[in-house]
Amino acid sequence: MLYGGDWPVLQSKVRALVPEAFSSEGHLAGVWGGEWQTVGTPRPTFSPNDGSTLASTLNLDAQQARRAVQASALEASTWAAVSLDERCSRVQQAVSALREHREMLALLLAWEIGKPVAQARTSVDRTVEGVQWYLQEAGRLTHGQTPVGLVSNIASWNYPLSVLVHSMLVQALVGNIALAKTPSAGGAASVTLAVALARRAGVPLCLVHGSGSQLGEVLIRSEEVDAVAFVGGRAHGRTVAEGLLDRSKRYMLEMEGVNAYGLWDFSDWDLLEGHLTKGYEYGKQRCTAYARFVVQRRLFPQFLENYQQAMAQIKVGHPLKLDGDAAPALTYGPLISADKVRSLQERIQEALTLGAVPIYQGQLDLSRFLEDQDASAYIAPTALLNVPRRSALYHAEPFGPVDTFVLVDTLDELIGEMNVSRGSLVATIATDDPKVAAEVSPRLQAFKVGVNALRSRGDREEPFGGYGESWQGCFVGGEHLIRAVTHSASGEAPLGNFTSVHVPMDTP
Image (cartoon, rainbow, N blue to C red; front, side, top):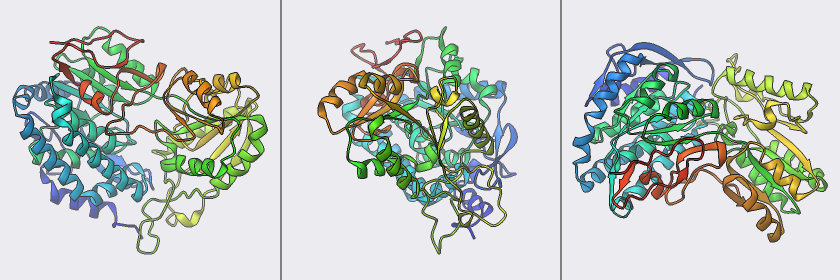
């Protein structure tokens, strides 16, 4: 039995709540030009949980997307002319609607991207609480700022609400038209429902469905697009950056990096164990997950003992298989697809063939799955020691439940091994010695560095960005999320990392 019932039951509830967001055949529609649109070619989506068929999206081709961008841009001047108080009122209504339908949104996330229900609820809560902070601070943060116009959002599937919808609502709050492409790998229904609730509240969010290969150029290079927000891998991020080279527009390109956790003269093993179990939430399918552990050689025996104890607490299974009358309490469910599992397994095998040492290999507990279900998208935790430099796992983010360990004998070696990806989003140094923390922290090529603490994307007043190749463009978070999509009356340029491409900070 499944928590919340099967997918047809959930989809019928969503369709009853926002019928305008569906075609007459039941496909997920897009919205632009002030109206819901039912053009496009139906494309089915599938649940990573068990391969079951979910909703179909109406995917656009490039020409259709071009018309959608043009129509979305036409709403910009009208929305920008709405007073800040009125925009705040409407965004508040949208936030209240998200809060009211928290359980439905969480179940959609559980079906579409395999997120355990408890973590899915947290994603909804973070969306609501994050936008609520901007509503409370709107007067201060928008003083002297004017909207750029049309913001095009292209985001990965792993946080469709707390990253994508959150950003869209903040962009709209300050007077922009926010247009998004639903993530191709998962999350289309949850984003569509959130956008529908916002539109009902009078917030003119716009939405299209389609593949990045088909729509990318239109959503990035169109003259009507005034800013581009991208969240994804480095390869796609570089493609986006190349598409902006001859364009003068704002951009925020969040890309991957190998986030490292270093240990030196450390003894708080209970703290470490908590960090390890926390880090495995959602199968490490997060841009701020720690995948590389750089350990002082003398500490490795104790580190390994606590690592194994932490892994014994990791629970993997179907996110909706009933546990009594409740959703199961899992650390993570499936990865986003069976293809992702195969890709990870190939990287693991490559590393082993080149000489990596297998340290830990978890096993899936079949009692946490449905009988005879397709479990090809599931993989248990894996850890490898001394992954060779020739291996992809040495310098690339696995974006899944695979850890690599490196042993070092000096602080210089520790710092060098923590900086292998030429820039990352977060890093942590675990040490009992404040002098070590003071020496190591400023030399780590990460935007956020924690001392005996995990770092994350954060929200509210905390800025977020990347170091080196993990980020290009304006930083976000706190006031920076607003400054990234507004012009300053003082002519002040947004803070960011613009070293790899031009700096298109056009101001009025």
